Image (cartoon, rainbow over all chains, first blue to last red; front, top):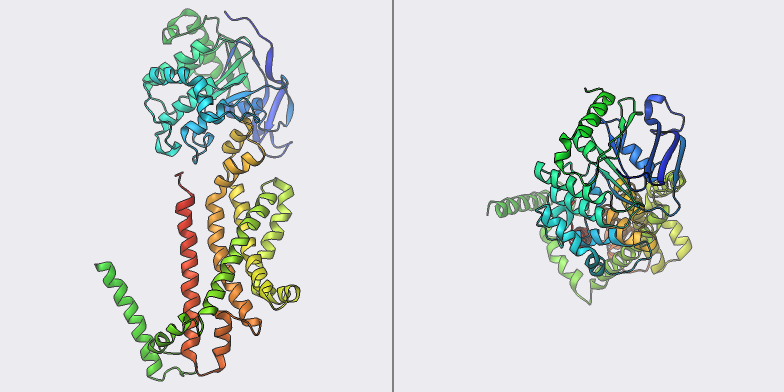
Length: 262
Length: 248
């Protein structure tokens, strides 16, 4: 079991976010009363049905959207590696895949290392992952010249290797086939415990996948607030076989109940 | 083959109908010249001793006005940008200025820039800059939020952001604005030529011929402005395929 690291970024005091006006109709809330924290060395999974506000919670954590109440605290200078659900718009279509990846590998705005060197430092790691994922793609191509699945995999791998303290993946496997989904989950599970000063946030609506990749599961209900936080006491890495472990099954049951499915 | 035939038949039909209308006396020759007569006067526009200088002058002023307006328009557009409430009134001012028929402002430019080249350039450049600026603002507003946020999180800032993210995102709209802009620049240059005496240009030729018997030359000059307008538009349209090399 991983020990609790310090909170890297958190939504405190029952944070809410409205659609538009600050004191809008409560029904217009994208989410409300959410208290959540991404802790070092731990993986937090946000689970919930469509339209329950998962992406909005992620955007609030990333500091991309203004809150209507509550508070966001983040360690000063924190860096995010974010893979949005809308991955097509997370790349610049006028830049080759290689340039898009290189932009993610920069250490900051002032980093003027050329793209070959940027890629070079992580090339080994990336190529190994591409091979495991059985991905053959020419990185000199443009994003719109490759399939959705290929683009998602390239972005997935880039988000894994780019500098960042908190890695946020929003439905990272939505365009992947069943086999690659399993391999990608496995890759994530191997990397999660690596650094105690790094936190992971994963968003999914697949309960089994969520439990497999979580230290903590936060279930967002249809009321757009957190209906349960469930701990998954399993060691890392976790292949798909852990889905049958008693601790997994117990967590699955708890999540299912919280989500109102079981 | 069929396509060529369709073109040939359509053009021949229009030409013949036009010719017949004038020859039959349905329309006074003081008002409309027959295509055959216009054709004989077209050559005059290309002769250095006659009106070639007018053709070159109009084309040069329209092109210069347009070329100046591209960086001006894009810069204004970027400056107004998409800053929510603060850019709203500025965008409105832009939209309002553009809504004034720019020809109505030619006398104003005349007062400010005198009877020389300045007025022609100012009028053409003014109206073209405005549409390009507005197109740029629209382009900035159409940037998907995920793209903007990605740039924020990757800390792409300053000039690099303009070059790497903002301009390519708005490129399609900007080029659309340029197509409208180049047509406007030509219109304004021709109108300014008409209103400013003792000057060169196709507008001058058209205006001077209106009370003479040389209606074929007047129509030849009108035809030339049309060809110019079509050509400039086509060239700028072709730039789009050159500039935007990516899909999506």
